[in-house]
Length: 80
Length: 80
Image (cartoon, rainbow over all chains, first blue to last red):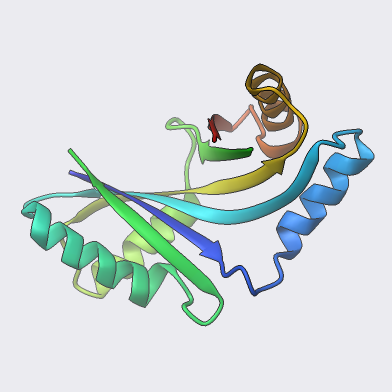
């Protein structure tokens, strides 16, 4: 069983990495790009859990370890 | 129109961030986590492109700017 987890800066938080990439794309001539936001993506491989247990555990891991909830939001999907 | 882009370390490449998180989770007692891989996730907002143009342009941006193809793979989806 796998979990896919997305951790993104909150929309109200500045995203300096995304801004830097946006500037780079503008200077390279990609004028159609209006905005860029950069986040993190995690793939966890899990063993010996039911789907419900996996959802509980991955929610807890996301909140406690992967995301800083002051400045980031997360979402996840359990696969297979 | 939006593009979602995932950039991940190739499977043959060491992923020190993923390994560090895996170790942290193990020491916190999450013994069911078998492996962790960390990548990057980008959301681009695009304007004034057809879907086909967007696919071409996002492919080029991913190859040229967002991913280092020596050590990373990417995939993307065009949304809306």
